[in-house]
Image (cartoon, rainbow, N blue to C red; front, side, top):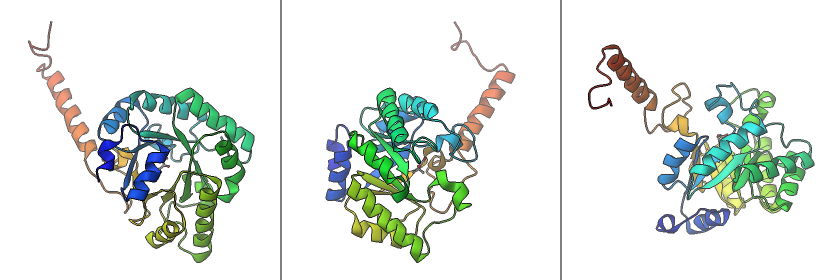
Amino acid sequence: MSINKEIKRVTTYTLQEMKRAGVPISMLTAYDYSMAKILDSTGIDVLLVGDSASNVMAGHETTLPITLDQMIYHATSVIRAIKRALVVVDLPFGSYQGNSKEALNSAIRVMKESGAHAIKMEGGRSIKESVERILSAGIPVMGHLGLTPQSIYKFGTYEVRAREEEEANMLLEDAVLLEEIGCFAIVLEKIPSELAKKVHERVKIPLIGIGAGRYVDGQVLVTHDMLGINKDFAPRFLRRYLDAYTLIHDAVKQYIHDVKTRDFPNEKESY
Ligand code: KIV
């Protein structure tokens, strides 16, 4: 649909419009200026400064170690690069759970110091008070349900969530709750597509899936995974669009060869 071409700047309102018009929402992660610049130039709708930076950029096993200061650093770099996309920033583990005042302070820091447009938080009823407090300060909140990696030590596995009825019902209730209290969208991660479909039938705000099937309003992937920079991660839901690992590897091998053989630099590359 033409709505995508007409958009000058994607806002939370634009996403609602896209949902209403049946236009799928595209979302990818970004953590640095150079990549964000390329991604924004493609017309991507949303860039998520995900706490997956903890894995992808810093090499941690989980998303838990990344700090609020580090998230703000990544977000600031991304914001400098973008002209069109909506930039959503993850509140990291430990910056909002349990204490709504601290949650609000964390969200305000992200918005003030990075210039981001919205924040994302993992969880439903357990973080209700924090979400409400942040929303009451005028900060848009994207929810995140299903597999919530900040709770990995509670789950003990990265397997598909909410296959059982009890957990599925709770997820459905949490999605309704997040909509009621004012979230502008929800990420649904690694849940059965039939459950995502049920959520879609119940809530009107945009649902962005990752491993949640096709009955949602948009899709998000980790950029480094879909570009094949990270070769080791190959879940069923991931579609690879490039083998960037091999491309970069081969280019660097060629560079080493050129240096070692004194082919580089040549006359034209010298002053
Ligand atoms: O941190 C992240 O990259 C995310 C996506 C997987 C949705 O939360």
